Length: 234
Ligand SMILES: [Zn+2]
Image (cartoon, rainbow, N blue to C red; front, side, top):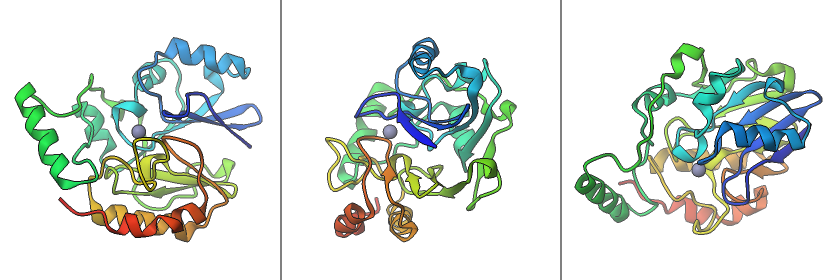
């Protein structure tokens, strides 16, 4: 199994390669399906090789070509709890920057502009029969040895998964500027975020691939635990 990032160091978009089969993690930021096709071609991968799509969470920077992709091929789709509703609304579950004051400001300015802080063209994913991960699940992608795990906190629909000895964590942790101490920039529930952070340490993976920035280790997570536990509820 090989993990390849087809995006860049700020917005990761992983493909997991199992011989001829490919699993796609998220659907990129502001990129068309045509461009993605060209990127995949460089690895000798065609859209039909994609057997499953795992959406780590519904934020605009992770879903950009998802609807077009699902209208083109029919992979297994795996999402977290609440993801279907969020995609239908076309809204990010976007409640706060890591500090509560910033959350108030975000909503204040969004209201002035007449809407929700982050909206996009909504789409109905329910017609594609997604698998919804509500608890640990090692059945859905058993043939690839993948164990899906809910990781609420950054958003309530956040999920990650174990593959081999590695873990793919979405934005439950963030490893690129301007994020500090591996904290995601946005938090929906501080309590859930802390529980998920502890869960990540307990998992004790060799490497954690994250939604933004390069992979981190369990030692990195432990070194920043103190900061994670200081995140406040709004
Ligand atoms: Zn993100």
